Every structure is written in C-alpha cells, then in structure tokens.
Image 1: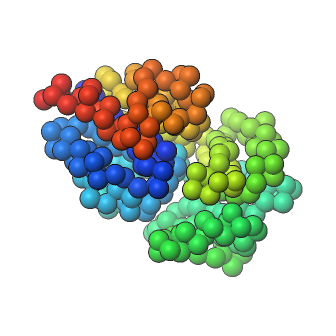
Image 2: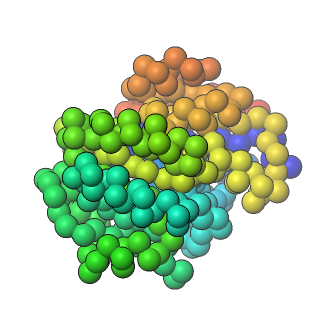
Length: 283
C-alpha cells in the first residue's frame, strides 16, 4: 500500500516561466523516485506534451492529463481511463459556442490515437497556439474537413482561445447551464499574455477525480496526499489533499486555501518542498 503520494501541476508550478523543467528538479526528482517517492503529474496538458516536457524523468506512476480527462501510462502514452463529454451534450454545446461567435479546438480520442482538430483560425491567439503545436510536431494536430468529422471522435475537451472580454459571458453561461455536467475553466495563457483560454470538459474530468481514479488503478489508498498547484483548476485537488501546497507565484485564491506555501516555480519550489518533507522520512 502506498502510504504517501505526491501530485504536482505542471505549468506555473513544476515548470519554470519558460515552460521547462530545470535540471535541478529533473535530477532531484529522479533521485527521490529511486529512493521510493511516489510522484505523478496532474496537468491540463496532453500526454504528448507531458512526455515531451518530462523527457528523462523516470515517472513510474500513471499521469493525469487534460485536467482528468485522461489517465495515461507515462512511458507508452496508453490511456488507462478516458472521461469524454457525453454525446448528448455535444450538439447543444456547439450551438451555445456558435451563439457567442466561438469556433472551438476539439480534442479527443478516435479509438487509435489522440486527435486535436481545428476548423478555422479565428484570431492571433489561436494562430499562436497552432504554430506552437506545429513547431513541436504534435501528431494530434489536424484540420477537420467538417464539424461532423471533428465531433465523431470521443471528445474530451473543447478549447476556446480569445480575449477575456469575448469569453466572460460564455464562461458564465456554461457555469449556469452545465455546472452539474461539465467543467469549464477560464484562464490567461501564461505563454501568450493577453490571450485567454476557456476549456470545457466532462464533470468527471477534474484533477481531484483523476487522483481518485489513479488511486483505484494503482490499487492503493494513500493515507496522505500532497498536491502542488497555482491555478483555479487546482482548487479541487487542494480540497481533496491532506497537504495542499501553493507555489509563491500562485493566484491569491489558491494561496488562501493552501495548507502550506513553497518557493515559486522559478525557485524549484515543488522539488525543494519534497526534499525537505519527504527525503529520509519514508526510507
């Protein structure tokens, strides 16, 4: 039985402001896991991005991607669990997005591989993201011939990219109309200041539900859970955890509910906290 489990967010938490893992954190994480540390990731990113960013990190536990839409084997990318948006909601949701002039990016699984469909490029924020995916040779990316093609897969996420004022009312509508069925998060992209993302997932696709599912998959029931985060999509796993650690650069509402604070993502705050609180204790 796993007696202690550590789960970290990536962007703004484990990764630095350049969106990469420092050599210090990479080296120390591998050392700690060799000593028996049970460590994994809960991120809004895809398994493809997580694997690229954490190349050389010897993660043994499955990772939580797309805010809990996927539970995946880190080394192979195989999905152990998929929480897709219910088919009966998709047509209704598409109509709501269109009413606000929004054309989403659509992410999901077609039965063989992950897909990231776009239909048209509506603004520079979307263009910047698609350019980034092309530069990283993201195999998921493709232009759908039609909306019907894009939603024919198991859809796990709709992503809207626009200015904040264009997404606020839509975000409020989704919260009002779908709060019992869907999760929606509005946040500024830290790597493209001024451009906001509104992501929409199934209600079960949240980090806390992902952690609970991970526990079941691993056949363990941790007596202690420590999580690290910085954004509003980390709040539910903060509520679940015995120890919720906010990095110094976290949003005020995240710090407010944290049980502990640590150094910023630029200061390797996550790994230094683990070194201080775990190293030697479990061995």
